[in-house]
Amino acid sequence: MAYEVLSRNLEFLSENAFNHTYNSYYNFKTKSAKNYRQYYDHSIDQIDAYFVNRIVVKSSSVKWIDYIADMEILVVKFKNSRVYYMYFDVPEAVYQKFKLSESPGRFVHQYLAGYKYDSFDKYADWLNVYQSVREITNSIE
Image 1: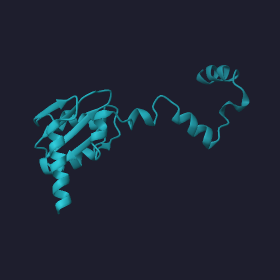
Image 2: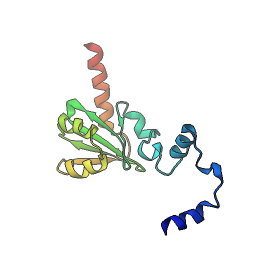
Image 3: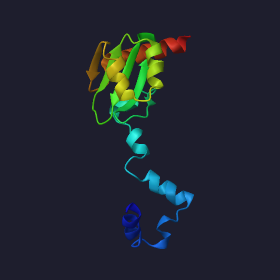
């Protein structure tokens, strides 16, 4: 019965409808709804430009992450958001685990829920001071 239904629908297709080369198949797959851009967002806004060490992650909800090791601050920016979140006192081991996570959005909810955090809609002034002091001390060394 299934064959009869399918064979009736296949009669309307041309003979070349399923004759694909590798390139045509690749172009078809990359133009579909679930493409590269759905998971990686490399666009840069005003906040993104300040976090030069950010890592763009493969995620449907997290845009990028950054880690300030000497202050143990994990920075997370979500897609379609004008703010970024800073999680305080996060060990580097958690950051390393986050980088390897298959689902960064789920990781935030499961593993970062216990850490103190704050959200900012512009680059924090104290980060400017921190970056300036860091540049001065690095140039002295």
